[in-house]
Image 1: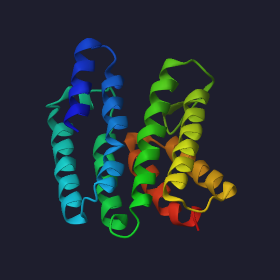
Image 2: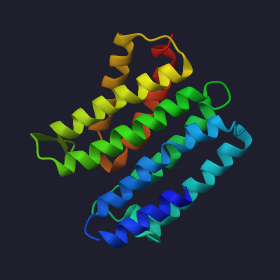
Image 3: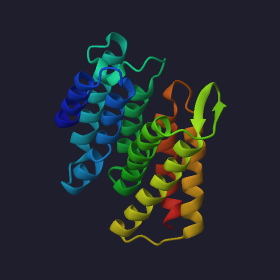
Image 4: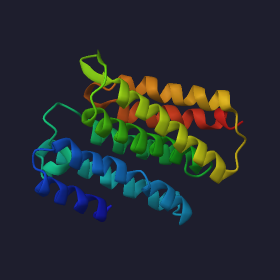
Length: 203
């Protein structure tokens, strides 16, 4: 996490006009933390308090912008706080019995939504508006493809049953929830939606 934050700060100094880029570095870089914690077998008694502390720090930073590289995006968004709350809930709900579900939710959000935001802004394509939030064809396609790759890879790693139709349904759910991103609420809805669907998808 220190490395991710340091990279975001360096990025902000190097490209001060690319405010979304440093934020997305934190967004994407946070994703692998849960699989790493799973690999290291971090117990829930440590994982949840740590996640709560980080979420409180993001809330403080959101209020006072102590680290602009994380929050200063030029628009009203509670995305970083929602992301932290989502991770806390995923740990509480799934870490003890089904950590793969928690990892699925976080990784889809981190890589799918993170890359969709970066590529969608960098590449011109047809776009539309949902609840006053601009969405683009290339960004939405990136979300769909990345979510599929992440979930397929996690199925292979966990040696879970693969049902292509259910995989497609969960990816569609993730894309649909990402479309409704007003105030950054998708940072909460996407991880929870994917995690709650994981057991059904791999049944």
